[in-house]
Length: 80
Image 1 (tube, one colour):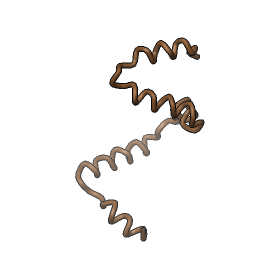
Image 2 (cartoon, rainbow, N blue to C red):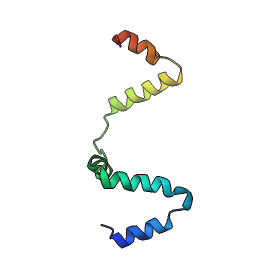
Image 3 (spheres, rainbow, N blue to C red):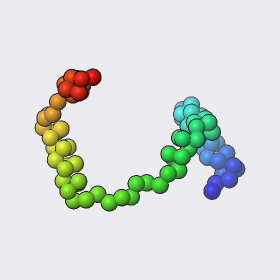
């Protein structure tokens, strides 16, 4: 785990144009335990089955072809 001194050194290396974004991130980490938990959570390493991968590629190809319905159409179908 990095020490506070190491964090200070990282902050000192942030370009001036990025300080606002860095401040927002650090403020979020300091104040929001949910954000902190998400940032330190392990990556999802569950394997994807061949069938799921095929279906994902099929869906992406369908989108690329312009198939499907709009969000508005979906909302109407769902009564929203």
